[in-house]
Amino acid sequence: MSSEFSLSEDSYNGDTRSTAHSTTNGMSVFEQPSSKDDDTQRTRELPDVARREQKAVGILKSLVCFMLVVTVAAVGTAVYLFAEDDEKNVFESTFRGTSSELLTIARERADRVFEVVDSLAIAATSAAAANQNSSWPFTIIPDWAAKAENFEKLIGIEDPIISVIHIVDNDQREEWVDFMGAELPLLFTDAEKRGNLEKSTKEMLERTTPFPHFYDLDSDEKIVPATGPESSFIAAEMTPYELNPLGLTYINYDLRRSSEMRNLVKIVNATRRPAIGLVEILDPSGGGVVVESQIMQPIYETNEPDAHDGKVVGISFVMIRWAQFIESLLINDYSDIYLVLESSCRSGSTADANDMTFRIGGDGNVETLPNDETHDSGYDYLKQSRGLVDLDIDPSEIPAGNCVPKLTLSVYPSVELEERFNSSKSLLATLSIVAIFIFTSVTFLLYDYCVGQRQRKVMKRIQAQELIVSNVFPSAIRDRLYDQERQTKNKDNPLAFDDEAGNGGAVPLADLFPSTTIIFADIVGFTAWASAREPDQVFILLESLFSQFDKIAYQQNVFKVETVGDCYVAVAGLPEPNEDHVGECLFGLQTRNLNPISPSIAFFE
Image 1 (tube, rainbow, N blue to C red):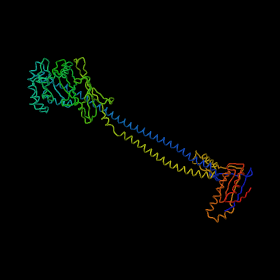
Image 2 (image 1 turned 90 degrees about the vertical axis):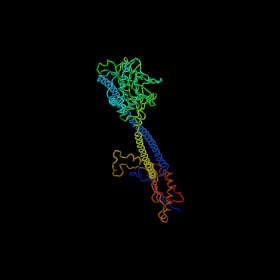
Image 3 (image 1 turned 120 degrees about the vertical axis):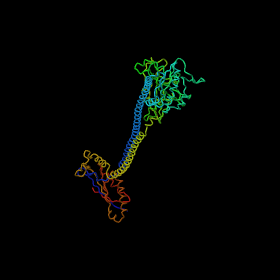
């Protein structure tokens, strides 16, 4: 197939004729030339810029995620420590309040014991004074069983031993046997009526030694009569009437054979004041030890103020066991704590020890711990102490080799007690905070993913639009349009309206090119030829012809303006000014040799 086309060239030089290209409202009247290097470079720059920005955003997101993790760890740890510290503060404050209350009750109970001892001494003196037919030691407190019950209630401690000790001189022992032979049946009968006897009155009398005595377990007789010039210290009134390990009562037992009791009596006689002893013995029921205290107060013949200068005729006596004393303090929910009874001096087999430790278990039972067991030293800072007994006796008044202890009670918490205050609140609070942060992080990541997806779609669209713009406008015009768009944005008033020309406030792009050559190429007879052909044949002809024109235009630096039907319009000398624009029109000459088309070219000058 052969066709002819006509080509016209208009050349404008000097100041006589000029050609201008312009854009209005951002649209160019020229079509982008085939500047493939610029287009390719521009197309490559967009993904590179996007990748750089995405990398920067990725680094920022990683930093944000790292900060979130650090924040979660820091806040979670802080919340956990704060909640744990709050629980610890509650534990410590509760323990201090509880232990203070416990120590207050203990001091009141200890004072009450001494009050009972004093009341017992006054009652014994008053009973003897009221009976004109009797004198010490041959006197008994009338209605002893009832009074003993009242004394027990006042003490408020389980199973105390309350007794009146009579001082029987050597020359009074035979008379004492007759006196007790008449009084004991009455004492036992009265106690039996009140349920204070282990056995019946008859059995108790049978188990009572009628004369002052002591026990010698190495002797065949076991029971040895009390002899010698020293006075005997004999318990007459007593509650409860118990049996000793030999199955005998303690009535008529000479207490001076007990070293602890003998020393206390010496102190009472020397100081004329109450005294207390502390002794640790093996539990008769087996297992463990028992810590006891004996409290004594001298009894005088009268209750007159100057009676203290007179003769000591008897001793009021109370013995308590400290385990029962501590149990009597547990009016509230006191458990899982340690109580340490500290003594300034000790007697008994463990005289080198200065304190005894008791543990109140979770069930409220009081356990006396061996000397090698004590409280947890980690709780020493929570120690609460209070003095229980301080008789304030001048040490110079105490016989040599003896000691009147000052007793102090200290309270310590246990691990079990602290664990009762350790709840799951701190862990739940921490998990809640962590859950909130995790939810926030997941929401942030999900939002970031959605934004990233949208940005990728926008970037693809921008790249496509950039490619279209690059094919429509020359690179120089395209860049100027972009720059103008950035520069003419009204930052102060984003709501500004477009100007009357509809340029949105932008100055139209219009450049003067004094020297240009315009080329018009038209296929001769195209209309008749195309009317006899199929559309695809027409398209193939135009595509083949104009593609070769585009290649030659690119080689000759000729700017393709547009194609209108079979007309190909191009310009030499713009958009880059070129004085040799006519020479560029070798483009027209080169098009003559295009195959398979043999064009006919006409030049118009």
